[in-house]
Image 1 (cartoon, rainbow, N blue to C red):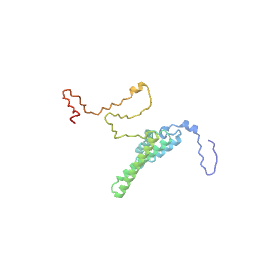
Image 2 (image 1 turned 30 degrees about the vertical axis):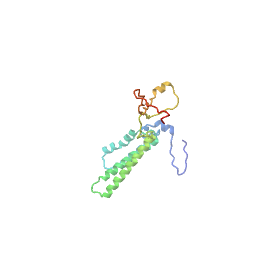
Image 3 (image 1 turned 180 degrees about the vertical axis):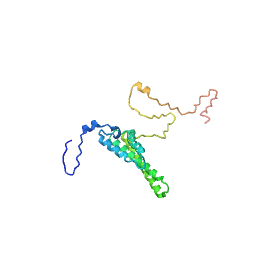
Image 4 (image 1 turned 135 degrees about the vertical axis):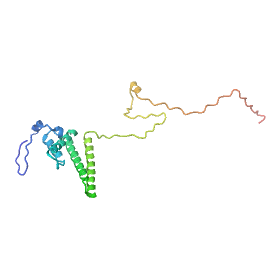
Length: 205
């Protein structure tokens, strides 16, 4: 990239090829450029509360941010930014929960902290849903309920192919059960032992 001197404009030397060759932290921020990965790591680290800890505890705490990002394993810049926002949102929610536990505070102050923690938890869930959707894990599924199959019928759940096919395919397809005939009353048979009814002659009519 050629450097141009412009008054009032910050000049940042940036060589994409050199940056790609030097990248070692893609597993943290998902980018091919460590300048972006380092920025995300810095933002994630400083989203944690650092006060009230000695040097050893602070050192262990600084390892938490890269460990969390490595666990989420962002695959690109978008996933890296979502991962950092999730981490910051989680840290803020935990800080609100911590402050809600302070003794000798007013009910309003405790309620305010718990309300903020609840909102942050819902934001975290939205970020997680966005990350899963970006990764292709949020496909819509259809649930079929209350399927009634009457006697003699057959229900098929899955892909159904219509049209003609070979005999082999027809043999592999489940066949519908035969519908039983409705019961009918037995027809009266001719009684051979019954006496014939005498016919009336025309003269007696």
